Amino acid sequence: MKAANPYYTPLLDARYFQIVALAGILVYSQCCLSFGPNWTAVALAILAALAVQWIASKMVGLAHFEYRSALISGLGLCNLLRSDSAWIYALAAGIAIAGKFVFRVRGKHVFNPTNLAIVLLLLADSAWTSAGQWGASAIFVFALVCGGGLVTLRAMRADLTLSFLLAFAAIAFGRSFYLGDPLAVPLHRLQNGSLLIFAFFMISDPRSTPDRRAARIFFAALVAFVAAWIEFGLYRNNGVFWALALCSPLSPLLDRLAPASRHEWDGESMGGHLRRVLRLPGGEEKSARDVLNPM
Image 1 (tube, helix red, strand yellow):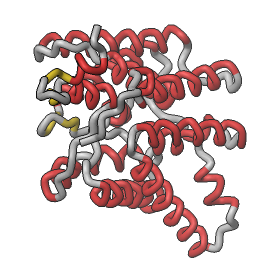
Image 2 (cartoon, helix red, strand yellow):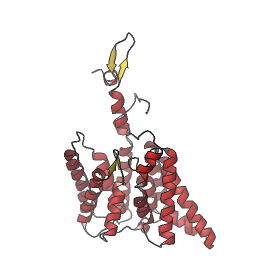
Image 3 (cartoon, helix red, strand yellow):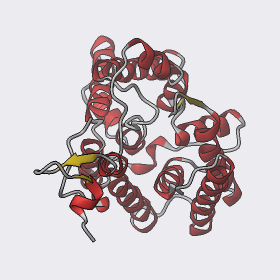
Image 4 (cartoon, one colour):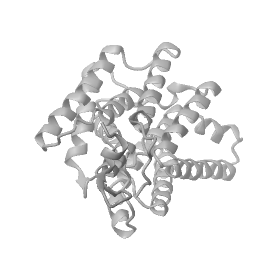
């Protein structure tokens, strides 16, 4: 259990950093690179994600409307998915949020919501991804890595991101060395905006990945190996998205084989601490909420 943080503020929740980072990438792609969905599609995706989240929350009897994860899914889809129809973005957002409520094992998501929507629409041939659209701008890559690093460190899942990137980079460099390719080939492959968004904002999702660190490292390396096999062995695009979808059902099994404490967002953790009863000097008992906020 996390130690109680008397200086906690809800604005330090990692999901706010993730929302700001994903929104910044979307604005950058629209204003500086002139690609991506139009603003109508962006609005439809976000509204659909929030609406399905609200409806599903009511259907299962949740008292709290979790808008942050819905915003993250909507923004993530706008950054990664491409379609000529604005309604496809709304459909993708609906699939992503509905998938969170349908595919669950012991309170955790089986699939990453955004990744589930992407692979289903790729299977239906209704959308595509464009791995090379981000280019290899050093400034953009630097900003993306820093922003993503901040998110994963706040979410306590930097080990997933680093393990995946190291494993994928080792395979890419090893393959180029075996084939005699120049170093520019694997370096260019790693300077891919979609790959970095996947590594920092998708595979690092604590609600769809193993709880124990050793299991997470194994999971990340497995996703990297399967992605490399799909891209280099089967010569298919979007290897990382297919790989994560194929490996995600293993996450509940790894949690059962190697159990560990469940990840809690800052607000959830603090909510639990606030309900604890503290014994004060003199034997008086008060709730933590009353001690920290006597008014």
